[in-house]
Length: 401
Image (cartoon, rainbow, N blue to C red; front, side, top):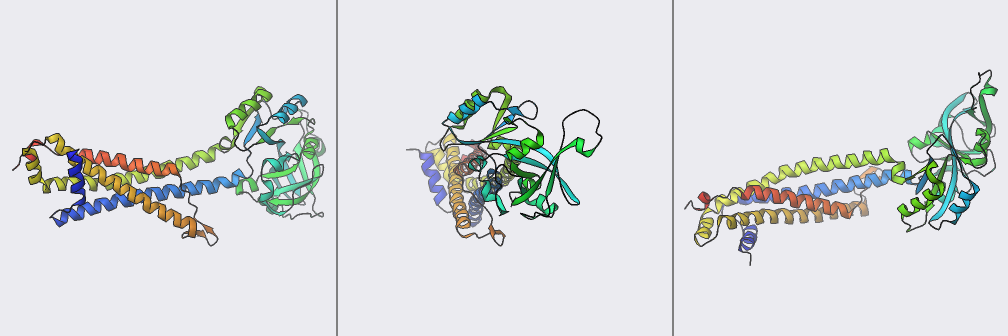
């Protein structure tokens, strides 16, 4: 039987004859409980915000995207197409052409990125769910689907045949520009739909049939800028990337969803880390109360410690008593705090107690890794605090009587 652990449990459950020490102990335990609960609630809140933010990009981001490594475009050969069609890991893929263009309607104009997509694009991403009004375009037509911001800046609705959109792109070449006709390729198009994803995409992108963009850029029929893939459920992403890379070779680089939004992921992860460090600092301050509580308990139990020493307990054994007591206080307080935090976050998910707008509840996401992170943080800080406090036990202290 571990005598030090047994006595530590007794000290943790029993009250001191000194009310001031009891009060300090209660404050220390409450500080640990509230600290662990606050840390978990904040981490769950940031996890919810991260998921909420990424859901808008995930609507139009494929599982994998092949981008050219040299120049603006590459040639997808018929042999490569047949090999991609035969891959069992791929549910669907779409050929993409992206280019900067200039749009004009009457006296209004704006720059945009035109994204030409083929008939498989709707199988790769859930683009239909982003349509604010109107419909998706038909292939082999001069129809466009505009971002909400572009549509607003050009004062366009849908199917407004009185306001055709002129799409301009510079012609390749080095000769001197003598007229607008010689400088630009142009097509006339009609808006048939407006999408609403996020402000960045709404203000930048225009979707079009791939044949329209091929004609606009004077591309070859098999010349594209990107390939976007949707993988089958349960497929290993790394293996799928290796198979696609083996077919397309070094002319493309493959990126997953996280890599496509690298800057956004880095920003969200940095914010999450900063919040964790700030609240860990608050917890460190709270654990000074634990150290103070243990030291006060040592002074209060000096007579008992002297008795233990006289009947054969070593200074090391007595140090263990308060080390175990502080560690148990921290772990028990951390568990209670986690339970309290789980109840709070569960209530928020179920009943939307805190609202951002009248129709949007503050998002929270309960993640198992956050539970482990908070428990480990509390445990480590508790062990360190207990070690610091128990180091105050000396032979002269226990032989004081």
